[in-house]
Image 1 (spheres, rainbow, N blue to C red):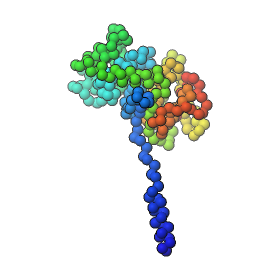
Image 2: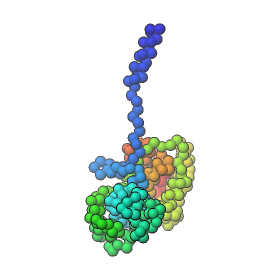
Image 3: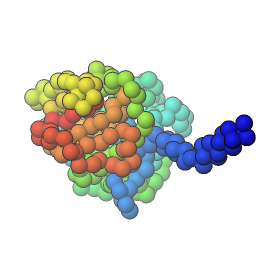
Length: 278
């Protein structure tokens, strides 16, 4: 009996000193690495990706995206706020009383961004004047100089979310065991980037089974000029739709280790212009 107790005590000691795996990090996102890295909350990354997506749909230059980011960072820190000064709401703190739309419309980032870019397009020489001046010409803020402080950050975000610097958008979360909601993801893609078709950013979407885990995957055919913008959008919205992997142009993003960023894809190289997500 004494021997058994000693053995049992030794087992408990052994169990007690075993290393417990650290808990997974809370969901989050990051653009870039090193000194140019910018940490984002998941909803901030979703909104940033949406702004870049609307710009791609409207064939706007990167500078338009930078102007929008500078405005959104100042007004809401890239959050979709349901409150603000007087009746201001949403990403850009637009006001229903000033003709921007209803409260419900403005609280839709796709609608709010579309209205922002429509107003920006009316600003004379907006691609040449200072970014903070163009933002103020749209927003008509009480403090027009406030946008200037965000120009550097907005420029970095633009490089990553528009794909000027490829595979720069990464997020991480613990993916579900179930298959991704590809139907909902494709529906939101179309709302952001425009209708699918040869003239659109997203040309078409087909579904297939993954050779690795047999889960359904979406193969998204896109215009190559906007491919990394779409890939970044998929990563930023991965948690919302349960996506665990996105692959494009020899790189792969995986949800569980997304904090490591995109990694070289060891599998077959995807066809140029085709993003695989599932």
